Image (tube, rainbow, N blue to C red; front, side):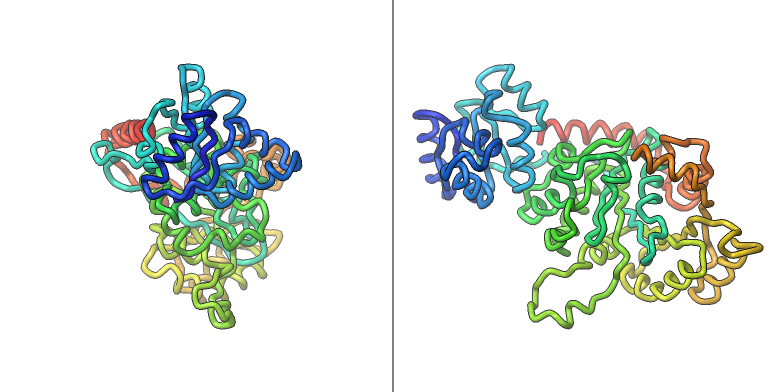
Length: 414
């Protein structure tokens, strides 16, 4: 573990010595205000640039918990760099500040062994049972993967279940844009980085997630070029923790399923562009396969079907035909699609979502789910029916409040 200590005076030197005695590599001991100042103005001087470089290599930042030293910008920067931030608080106001920023406050005189320990949930408060991972996939051509992923998450979050929406699209992430949420925050990439180090907890997921009504959202990459951060083992580890966080994790995926890059790459364990999609399909409890109700969309889906089934293994696949309208297929559009899918893929159980340009455009204009903007639209109504018939799993009513209460205790103690 690599640590940066930003505590003034004798206490800072003592912490650095105690951390070194614990076998930790202390990268720097700086003034308490230095990290916040460096984040605010990286061009202030060579010291600021050097400190930011050390932070990018560090795993932990110990800093005094004053309002001038623990800022929202510093917290956001640590999230982007996957650095755990530990504030040392001397009074109640500093503890309240740390809590408001999603941090776990520590006493100013806390021993180094406590500050260096990664918070883990207690076995006594672990929530009973584990949640599901629901993957939403579709072929190339914008069949409506993201739109349906958002609507499915909203339909599942009916007050009886805790639901998360994850953007794991490594090619064209768009959940944040479609829902009006910021994409410069930590999001799913930060969760994957921390999961690789074994530092991802339920409390950390709750802290880095954004909120969309009753749905927790882990936004995707703000630049598609960062796709190596979503590696196969990282995604599997992050989704495994998500099972303890919420009842249902809805994951929006990219279209490509090819594994050719493993053949052409000279790196045995090099990054794979489609690793996030393949890892999610591998671990998913349920796969929702989306296709567009037109000749091109159906053709693309049929051609990709063998690769999808190879990637999903034994996981059940529910097929949803989106943008259903007679204008693109003629008379009996649903019948034509149903017969084509049954003939070429063997799928007979198909759900349909109608094309509603007015409701879809209103949602896009306001950057909100269709269910929030146009609740009477035919799209959320069809999605709710699909979720009720093919996605939702009945639970004992007595188990759900216990599960939510256990998670709240877990988040507080982590």
